Length: 375
Ligand SMILES: NC(=O)c1ccc[n+]([C@@H]2O[C@H](COP(=O)([O-])OP(=O)(O)OC[C@H]3O[C@@H](n4cnc5c(N)ncnc54)[C@H](OP(=O)(O)O)[C@@H]3O)[C@@H](O)[C@H]2O)c1
Image 1 (cartoon, rainbow, N blue to C red):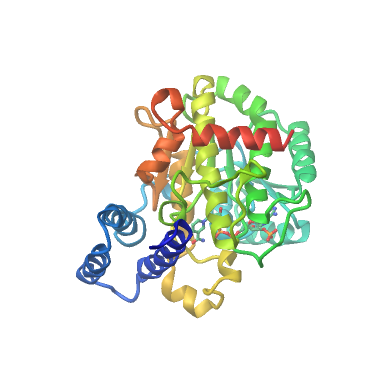
Image 2: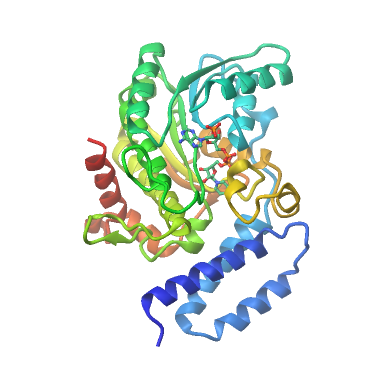
């Protein structure tokens, strides 16, 4: 009889297998092949069947059958007078997003670790967009060091009088085992904590901006991943009874839990602050080429080119989360590639709901943990 741990490991291994399959845009795997694969596996149990159906739907809708982006660089409304922050905009889709917003006249702040890297980035953007449009600024911020996050927030508040969209983007994925942040947290979870404290310190300004802006335009968006759906434990986060903190379970699981954390914080922020006019959305940017894969099996460029979509697509997903006009009641949303609303796994949807509303209260518990941890 298999233990809970065996089941978890089986699920993780299986999810990785799925991800490899899902990434096979250029290998042209047919739907029949994917379906027969699921049929074979589904013989294991009914419970597994249900999970597989959900995984299949997610893989197909978030990785393989991807519609055209909804919002693109040509269709972004003017950003003149708007001020945005992107954590980690030096590379990846964050960089593409910086270019697009700059081109539309925005002031974009990059919060990052390395000012020299930032200067290169700024030069590249200016060279790519020769007609000076917006403004690109830098503030030193290492998300893995809460002290620098606090001073970055203070510096931003000193320099600006509005904040329209905060993009909580910068990650680290699967670093060598055991690496911790300056304050001693698992490095991947530390990035989520850093984003929490950054958001919290900037909230008064975000709220103020919402009072003088078009309804639904002032937002915080949180990068997540399809790994949340495919690989997280039931309820999203497993708590360590000894430490009352998310359990440290190895670098793959820690990455996934950090990304679940972003979903929970995004949804919880929306619940707490929608009456203040703040939209908070999480998004899976999609499987895209970036330096994120430097410490994974997709280290080499050839594999990445073969298996991943072009980086700019991730920026389109983020654009939808942060800049697409809101229709109806979508102050909280889970956005999927390349810009449309998706739905998380049912147990994660339950976790986002408060206990008094019939949920499990997982998101509130995580928010409270972040709050108490960063006091
Ligand atoms: N790429 C994908 O396929 C994929 C799939 C699902 C989800 N995502 C999510 O999408 C987001 C962006 O991914 P990406 O692929 O664009 O990543 P990326 O290319 O690796 O970019 C990461 C950015 O974060 C910055 N950064 C890293 N650690 C930092 C720290 N401690 N403090 C401040 N900045 C830091 C890096 O800047 P420096 O290194 O220059 O300091 C870099 O600018 C992440 O949240 C990721 O989890 C990506």
